[in-house]
Length: 240
Image 1 (cartoon, rainbow, N blue to C red):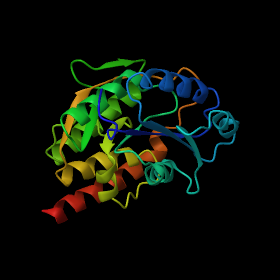
Image 2 (tube, rainbow, N blue to C red):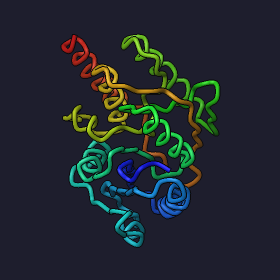
Image 3 (tube, rainbow, N blue to C red):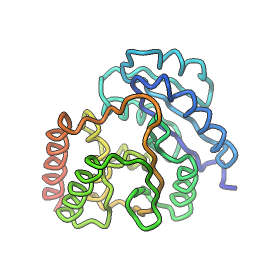
Image 4 (cartoon, rainbow, N blue to C red):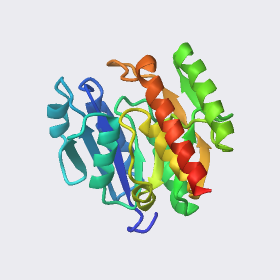
C-alpha cells in the first residue's frame, strides 16, 4: 500500500453521456477503491443537452465532485477539472468507458513508483489491446501521430489518446492550456515532452463506445489539431 500522501484526482469531462456516465462512475469507483484509498473523481459536465448533469448529481459525494463547465469545450472542461483537483496526481479519462480502469491502477503504480511527471499510455504498442477502432479514424490517427513523433523527435506514438496521468504540479507548470477541443489531448503531452518532463510510455487497452454518439468529428477538428501542432512546435523552437 502506498503512503496516504500518494493521491489521485480523476477528471472525467462529459457531454451528452447520460447512457454511459452512470456505469462509468460505478465501474471506476468499484475498481479503484480497492487499490487507491485517497482519490477523488471530478465529473465536468460540458454543456450537456440531455440528462447527463442530473444523472451525475445522484453520485455527488466527498469523493465524487460534480462541476458544470463555464467555458464550452473539452479544453475548458479539462482546465476546470485541473483547477478543481486537489490530489498529487491527475488522470484524465473519457466518460464512455473506452478507457480501462485497470490501466488506471497501472498508471498510478508506475508514476508513484518511478517518481515520474507523467505516464503516457499508447494504444499502439506490442502489448496494447484495441477493440472496434473505426478503420478511417485508425488510418488518419497513425499517419498524424507518426508525423508528430518524427517532428518532435519523440519515442511516443499516441499523442491524441486522451487517457494519461500527470503530476498535478506539472500540469500547472505548462499553463496556459489553450486548446478548446479534443486537440487539448495533443497539447498537454507535447508540452510535457518539449519541457523535458520525466515520463514513461506504457501499453494500454482501448475499446470503442457501445452507447451514445462519438463527439470526435475529423473534418471539424483537423484545423484545431494543426493549430495545436504549430503552437507546440513554436514553443519547442523558442525553448531551444
